[in-house]
Figure 1 (cartoon, rainbow, N blue to C red):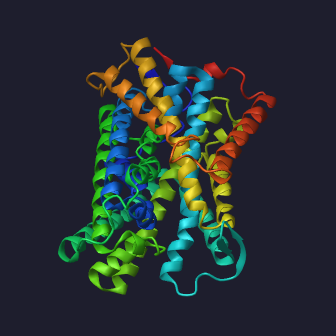
Figure 2 (spheres, one colour):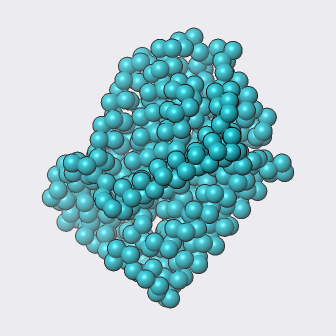
Figure 3 (tube, one colour):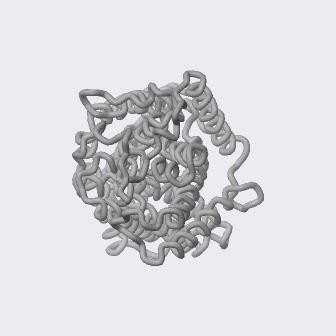
Length: 469
């Protein structure tokens, strides 16, 4: 049974090459988080504990990535998760899945908007100017608000201009990030030493779990591939394989830079730096200049994630609107650039407000966004299992051996991770800020769906779902 996407087929140009797709995913996953968050990770759970946390996260994501690979090969259409969950679970399940994922995507974009001025503050002396107010003990500076807002406008415009320019931009910056990570590792091999940080920072498994709940946010990005599948000029099987390869390479990269940072400075010193990876690089090479260069690589990382998640998030919003679950205006595709212009404007507008909430927003949005991502992954795994049972004859160019067993394993892993965010768990989301973000996102989704219904946009929702032939 081959899928025909009656709504999106022909509205987007298939121009993305194998390299474009890989760097979009890899650049999205290894963007900025490791440069700004590695000190917090190592301080919380030590080098050994942090590496274990990333192994746990990588194992879950690798299993989910296999499941995505099969689904993306069978249904290579714009919207990815929306398409799979619509076919398996219907409109309500599909909306919950896709809207949860969009929370994670928008969370990454918001993270980068705040991280961008944070990186510039490390590189540019006196950058923190014009104090406005304080939130959670962190001062909000006028320069941050201005630079973050302008950055949001520029990056949104870049994506509006077309997917090919965005992919070319991604390729250049991803190369810069990879070289920076390798340089850090070489410095650790040549000049590193065991630091005073205990293997688990004295926190045991509680510290490991504190870091582990952040790993989905660090690995999210491989699912940009299915979001942009309708613009990929590769075979269905290769599309699925690229998901698995990108997750594996990103996992190795993270573990390598965590080990290298831990060889440079103890966690207590790393956590004091606004850019721990840059501080580690400076210590390993005894050069402030090298540290500044790492900060510039960090800026490249910000831009790759920012770029990829604007692309992925806008396609997910487009897919929901095209199916009548969001206002129809969000399904607008620009006739000249073949981009979902109004969906991009929505994400760009939301992200431009982020610097108003200060640097503490980074931790809140990582945790709330991670919760949304893992919840979406649960729904994708359920969709996979439903389709394996209901439609065993579906054309699956990349069919996983022992698929049902892999699906059950994936369901157990994703549900286990989801439980780690809930009240009562040692790593639960914090009230009011993190749960507040989740609550506001739910309210926004309900409001947009209600507006869509009032406008009559949801008539014939099922007619917009992908039909088998």
